[in-house]
Image 1 (cartoon, rainbow, N blue to C red):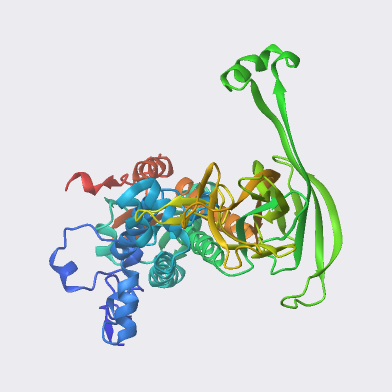
Image 2 (tube, one colour):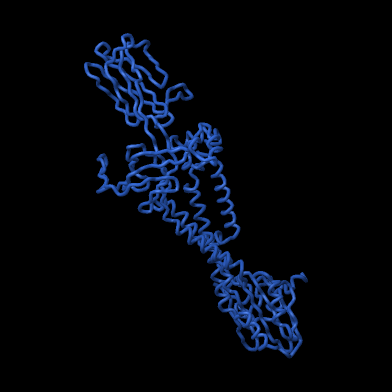
Length: 540
């Protein structure tokens, strides 16, 4: 890299505005505007983004080091995040419906567009992760681009500064005197916790330098926080899912890779009864409409761990690990996971019983029991009487074309197409049977399937949570707040005193709160013949 020679003899990197040794302005623009106050941002040092501009790496570095680029990335993230709250995210929609149907049915054309553009799963989408990663890259590059030259400049700043440097500071005074009172001023500075350095009769007093690193500590905290947020997309680091389990059934717990299973032994729901509760609950119970308010709902569960490897098609061998009663705010915790009670469903259709009868004589030829969650396709009643289920629609409805279809796989409104085979009708008779509805496509049948009864089960909904990134987010947030406090409640103050023949020059600089520094200079110079520095910006 080319060097720029200062009149003091020091060779500065290209792009430097203030000489690293004496502080003399060395750029062409600065020498022409000799009355303008110095721009002390980053101590006038050369930044990489302002020096290297040739290679593709330089261009990438310069792009992400721009504060404007960082702001635009933040704006895009804010807009995207706001759009993600217009409609519920996919994780919050009912598990009994598909995402495409939910957004189309609930929100119409806007909902369908919302789904097609991927906003239904925004915070896990690839393009949102790219924006988050871009913000992290921008923070890293922008911080390094400024931190490194600033650190070098502050570490090796000289005590004796050029006259022009002194005169073009915001706080400056010049006094014609032979009395310097340097020792007295030095004692006062030390008593006010300044770090004092002397050189050839000149003095540099400095304190609060650590406050200059506050923004960079902020950036470190944000980078760690963003890293934690991105790690949530890594398998095994973060799980937030819902597990529905019917009474008496055992289901694999999501996010455990088939290692843990949960059995719902019993679901219990208790309600407040008006005649048995105190007056404090009476208004709420009355508002409930049916005279009851849920008092407690809990799941009595058994946690199992799978033994051995997964064998597809084989029933897993399970070992009991724990039993628990899961209530609201009383989760079951195990192996970094927590199961929270969040919802329930009472009396879901489970099995339906039908009789195979003659329509005229009402004679029954047997019964079939259909498991609505896993129905058989064929039932043999003996003596040549058979029933086949040719079509099963768990959540029956007529679509836009008037054709029978199913909304979901949940048996909310089951419907069947039965084929009834007898010795008299070996080709079988077809009947469409739904709740309170029977259709015979081929005309009047001799036989029919008569509904006899239904079995129901209660379901419990448990939120499965695992978050190994929480401590990373906490550390990032804590570091960010340390940076905020560091940069907000302290400031970097410097005072230069230089004898120049029979003239004494005094200059002061701070990264913020010049009023406080000016008042401090009044106290330091009180009782001396030196002129108190004035704020030169007021002249401008």
